[in-house]
Amino acid sequence: MKRVKLIVFLILVAFASCDKDTDSYRSVGIITGMDGTMCGCCGGWIIYIDDVRYLIDSMPKKSNLDLQKETFPLTVQLDWQLINSSCPLLRIDVLRIRKD
Image (tube, rainbow, N blue to C red; front, side, top):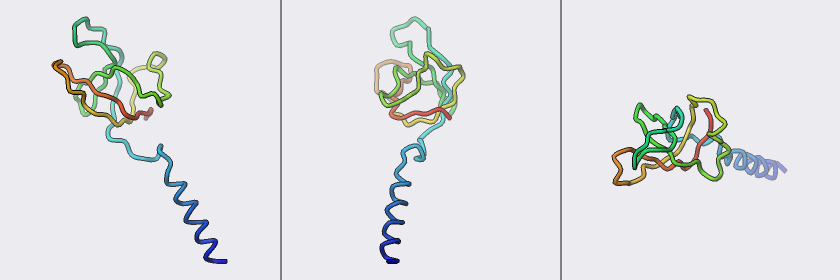
């Protein structure tokens, strides 16, 4: 009987540790609003990560963040990757994001 209880306990612990929201994120960023500059490489949402300015074109499909309805500045946690582009402005692809 002790063995069965131990197995059930271990299974419950394994399921509890699988929650994605408890995973750590790569970075903390501050979204300051929309970039309204009129140029070929401009546009998108402005985010600062480690004091570096990046632009975001869109949120991930699984995100429940609607930037049109948020108040800025907005602190977020996110996973991201730099987009290779011929543009001199730094753009990122947001893989995962949540409000901090």
